[in-house]
Structure formats: C-alpha cells, structure tokens
Length: 364
Image (cartoon, rainbow, N blue to C red; front, side, top):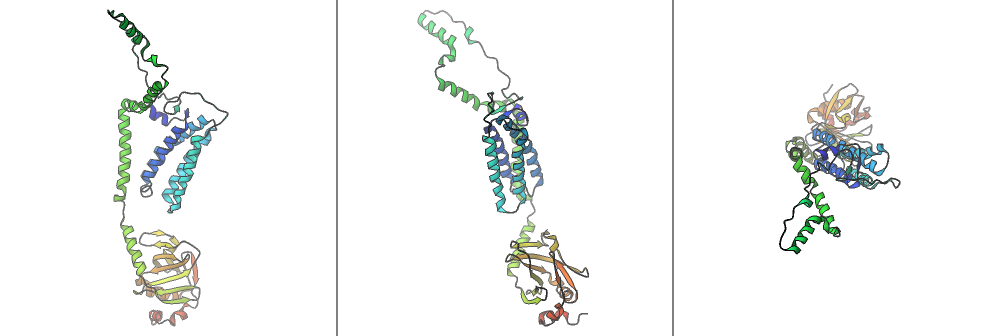
C-alpha cells in the first residue's frame, strides 16, 4: 500500500530513474493496447484514467527534485496524451513518429537538473516524500548479552567471546561485502512489499491480466464483416470496365460499365488516391453521399474514389441509370462532393451518343 500511495503522491521528490521507469511502464501499456484503442474507447478511457495521474505525479516530483517550477511537470502528460490520441486516430504510418517526441521528452525529464540546487536526501526506490516506504522497523535481538559459559579451553573461550562481542561488524574493512548486503536488501524490497500487501498485489495482477486478455480478444469480437464486404467491393471495382465515355460541356464525363451502371467523373482538387466515400461502410466525405440536382432530386452514390491525385469517379447503381441520364439532360445543374456543374448543352451531347440517346428517346 505505501508503494501505491507514493505513485499518486504530488509532494516529495523522484530521481530520474524512477521517473523513467514509471513513464516507460505507461508507454508500454499504451503500445500493448494501441492496436485496439480506436475500436474500444472504453480501453482508451481506462488507459488514460490509470496512467495520467501516475505520470503527472511522477513528473511533478521529478521537477521538484530537479529544482524547477512545478507547472513544468504537466509537459510529460501532455506529450503522453498527444501520442495516445495521435497514434490512435491518425490513420497514417507517420503518426508513430510522435513516439519520437515522447522519447525526447522522457529523456529530458530523466536527466534534467538545476546546477544551483543540490539535495542530500534519503531515497527509497528512488522516492523521497511524505509516504514512508521503509515499512515498520523490526526489533533486533541483542547478541552482545549472550552469556558465555566457562570452558577448559581458555584460548577458544576468548575467541568465542571476541566473535560474539564484535559480531558481523568486525568486517568493516570489507567494503565489498557490506555493499553486497546493501544491494541484496534492495533486491528484496519489492518481495517484502508483495508479502506485506498480498491482496493489493493480487488485485493489481488481476487487473493487468484482464486488460491483456481483453486486448487479445478484442479483434475476435469486433465486427469485421464491413471489412470483408469492402474487400469484395474493391475487387469488383478493379474488374469494373468504364465504357462509352462522353465528355460534357462543363468539364465532367459520363461512362457506363458492362452492367450499364453510370459513372460521373471530373478532375478536382489535389488529394491522395483512394476511397472518398462508400455507401457500404458509410464512411468518407459526407458531401459525396448524393448527387443533388437543382430540383432537389437526389441519387445515392455507391462509391466515390480518387485516382491520379485528383481524378474523381462517382459510381451509381444501374437501377438509377435511366433517371440519372434524364436528369443530367434536362436539369440546369447538379452538385456532388462540393463541386457544382452546369448542365447547359448536355442534352445535345448525349443525343449524339447512341448508348445514352437510347435512354432519352421517348422520355418526356
């Protein structure tokens, strides 16, 4: 319990190695969960609730130890949040470069020191503060009062008496032995704490186990059908043949595929190639959901993609082909993906294309 309290203590001091260990543990927990945080906001909230106060408290104690202003202790926490949200929600591999900022900030706070401030304090596990990490002191026996029985071997009696009076401290000259004992005591600090706080240690271990298990099983329970459907749509898109290209007066084109599904294409602003909108997933530019004519007639786009750094292709259902062609021929304008096009002169262009004229012949 004292060790746990010290993690949330905003007073006192932390040496650089303790701050490094605490920050490293928080980032390792984040990296372990990073692949599922976007799909599991509950885990993201839990991660921030657990790590934020611990990291902030350690950073403030580290700033106290280094001898700088307390408000600077918020910097590592802001960097941690920046990395967590950036890596989780920025869908680009370069988002992982944010971790470089985290490494630099952690290194700076680990090594920072004020040459004007020198602290000669007793640290336990790298911490000095109001929380006592030494635990209750154990009473020691007084070996010096052990009674020595007389014996006929006088020489041996003197040696025994001398050993009892001096005890282990007679090896004062062996600095290596005493350092080894001190190091061994430090190695057993954590074991002693676990033995004294078994319920807390078991609870902490159970919490970590639950988080790891949930993180491992999350991909199994996430809905992956849209991804499968999207893969099928991409395969169909690759096989799609756009034929019967017809250029319209206001710099857009019409095309029909082998199933007579209409595609409206135009050259827009520069953007990366890929999907702009998909009705299958419902994700993308909401301005591309419908093609809207000036009469407020709407038709839902099945998919809008970008190629060649700015060539847009909006695909529609073959069910809407006839109505779409008629609207393009007889309306004044339409808007799609934020672009507005005039339809003046489109009917004449369509009538000279046999494939499109078939849809217009006989229509009102």
